[in-house]
Length: 307
Ligand SMILES: NC(=O)c1ccc[n+]([C@@H]2O[C@H](COP(=O)([O-])OP(=O)(O)OC[C@H]3O[C@@H](n4cnc5c(N)ncnc54)[C@H](OP(=O)(O)O)[C@@H]3O)[C@@H](O)[C@H]2O)c1
Image 1 (cartoon, protein in one colour):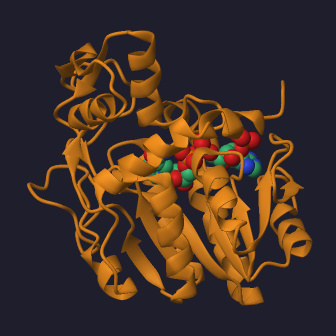
Image 2 (tube, protein in one colour):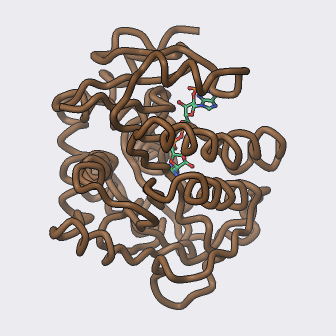
C-alpha cells in the first residue's frame, strides 16, 4: 500500500482514478475544494498559488504522484494562453523537480493531441510531435519540462472516457446524454483516436507505477476508431437509436482550437513493458455500461460540492 497523491481529483480522470486506487492505496486527492463526501483524504489548494507545491508535498508526504490537473479544455486554452502556459507547461516541471528532490515516483498525464494527425498509421513514442492548438503546445512543453527536471518520471499520453462529476465532461457522456434525450447529434468521421475507458486507464497507471517504469509511454487501449464509430458503438451497447448520430466532418465545425484528424496511438511499448495485453475497446465499453447499470453516474455526481 502506497501513499498516492492525485492532483485534479475533482476532474474526470482524477476522481475516477482516486476512487479506483483507494481500494488498494492511501489516496490523497488534491483539488480546489470542489468535492464532498469522497472516500479518500482531500487536500484543498490552488496549485498556482504561491508556495502551493511545497505545501502540497508537506501535507501529502506521498510515495507516488499522478498529476492530472490541467487546463484541459481546448477552447479555454485559446481564450487564456497565459493560464494554459502556467498550468500545462510550467507547473508539471515544478512538480517533477519536487518529486526528484523527495524521491517520489511521478506520472505526468499528457495527451495524444501533441501530434498533428497527418500520419497515415498510428503514432509511436518515436514520432515527432507537431501540436496544432495552444492546449497541445502547452501540454508538449509540460512533457518536456517533466522529463528534463526528472528523468525518472513517467509521461503518459492518454485519451479516455467515463462518467464525470459534472456529467458532461467526456465524449461518451456527450453521446449518451443526447441519445437518452432523443436529440440528434453529429459524430466526426474524420477524427480517429484510441478511446480508453477511464477504469482501464486507472489500472494501467497504477501498474506503471508498480513496475517502476520511466520515460514516455502511449497509455491507451488497443483499438483506434473514429469519433462517429465510437458514438455508434455506445448507442448500440446502451440499446439506443444509433441513427441519431449523423456522420460529419470536424472541418467547419465552428471549434476555435484546431483539431488533428488522426490521433491513433501505438501503445506496444507499454504492453511490452507491463507484460500484458492492452485493454480492448469492447471490455472497456462493457465496464462503462456496467457502471451505468450500477448507478455510478449518480454516485460520482453526488461528490460534487453544491455551488
Ligand atoms: N479528457 C480527455 O479525454 C483527455 C484526453 C487527453 C489528455 N487528457 C489529459 O488528462 C488530464 C485530466 O483531464 P480531465 O479530462 O480529467 O480534466 P478535467 O476534468 O478538466 O479536470 C481538470 C482538473 O484540474 C484541476 N485544476 C485546474 N486548475 C487547477 C488549479 N489552479 N489548482 C488545482 N487544481 C486545478 C481541476 O480542478 P477544478 O475542479 O477546481 O477546476 C480539475 O480537477 C489532463 O492532463 C488532460 O490534459 C484528457
